[in-house]
Image (cartoon, rainbow, N blue to C red):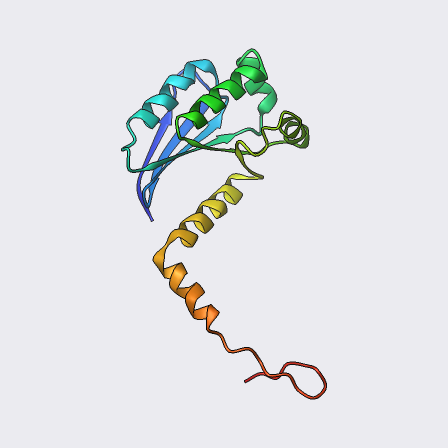
Length: 161
């Protein structure tokens, strides 16, 4: 499923960017402390993504306090994410604590960015998205639409055919 994986540990930072290609999607996973100096590395990957590929950006927010401290404020971080979203990048935040989730909801930003509890959950979301979009899945749904319902027995239970 993955055509290419590039890992970009950035010197002088505590951040790692992993870039993967999946079925017409360009997946960028950012782990560690995201700060203004690393925005250019993320932007470069996004700019080098072919137009026909959908850009997905997943950001590890498990250490959100450090991200906010390094960015001077949460608003700088959110503004950057909103800018990326306006550029057509699908942003997913994972590892959010409950306070940050509540804050995003209060700011009415909870629907602006995808959310996942862990990186594994984010991959499951991507897997479901790709499966739902594949022609094979559509044919399975069509077969299920023609499934013959089980017959009811005299006692009301369903009989297995």
